[in-house]
Image (cartoon, rainbow, N blue to C red; front, side):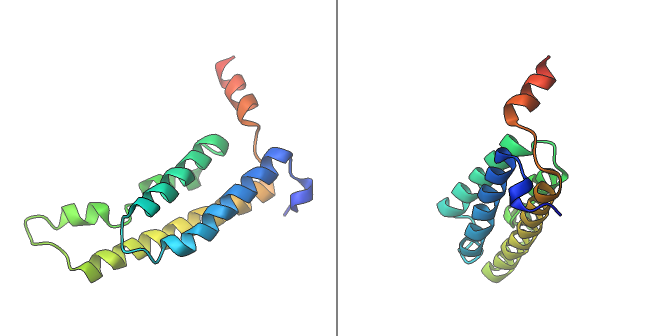
Length: 125
């Protein structure tokens, strides 16, 4: 595994930013479900993935995490799930997000990242 000294400046910055999101997840995990703070964290995490690793399997998995939102819809017609059940689904989503972020950080440390500008220009040229 590479240490941060061997990463490109872009890779170092990506690791720092994903580590910040991972640290923030600790606080997000204890929110009572989907809140404005959660939405801000999730939007920021999505933006990081889109900037640094738009085709990463970790991003694909992260974008599919439901955090309990879709679960409520699946209960329609059978009554609403209890708040405890919804919180359990939310916490499982947070666990999955933690695995995605940890895996992303490990992959960046191992393989680095392409410069977003170079990645874009190589696709458009």
